[in-house]
Length: 111
Image (cartoon, rainbow, N blue to C red; front, side, top):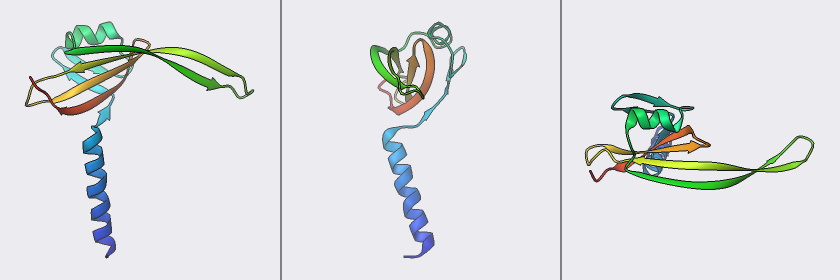
């Protein structure tokens, strides 16, 4: 195969993988403004309104200091889903300890 064909096949494979997993970013445009990484839960609620679905869990994280000492911390993860209807993509907002960490994009909503 030529180099050009190989590059094209790689690009198609990568785009289909990203499409299946959904895109992710750090901003989301709501009715009353843009929310971004670092915003607090209350700020997002004020700008976007209540989510379609909320989920909360606590994760235990393990950190190893340069000295070798291991510490464990608990992090509260809030996952808010906004279903914007059948003509829009679902947005999944992930918060860590009350601050927006990531915005993921799912498939089309149900409405």
